Amino acid sequence: MDNCIDIFPDELRAMGDYDKEASAPPVSKEHEFVDNLVKNNRVVVFSKSQCPHCDDSKTLLSNMGVNYKAVELDQLQEGSQVQNFLGQITNARTVPRIFIDGQCVGGNSDLKTLNSTGVLKELLKDMN
Image 1 (cartoon, one colour):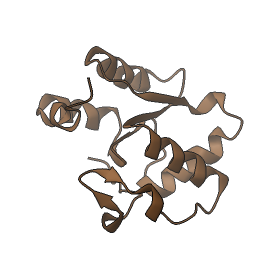
Image 2 (cartoon, one colour):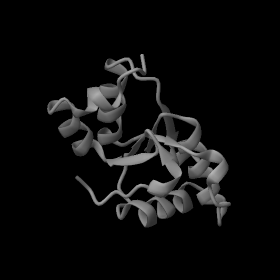
Image 3 (cartoon, helix red, strand yellow):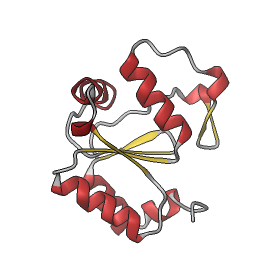
Image 4 (cartoon, rainbow, N blue to C red):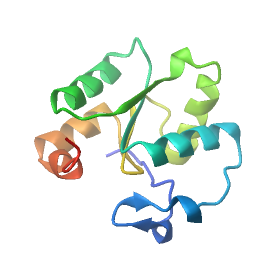
């Protein structure tokens, strides 16, 4: 997998859920934007509208019946800054950047690997 990291420290996590009250205040608009999306949505796909890899990931999730939040970075005024921030916290600027239960699981190839090994289904259980 990519060198994605959990932007939420282990001590703030309980059973895969992010402890919203214990979080430190975000340090930038981009941090706050990403933090709010990831905290309030079980699955978030940071995407670009013309990206075929992003489309593949969204199609896979849709076909599994997953309710996810897609954020089209190329349609946001601050999309480039958000993408830079995602690069800082995940060590990869490429899209898609996919978060499940507060953790970055990587990009499209990582999502496909998780799916083919059955791990994705386990991560997404209780979502439908």
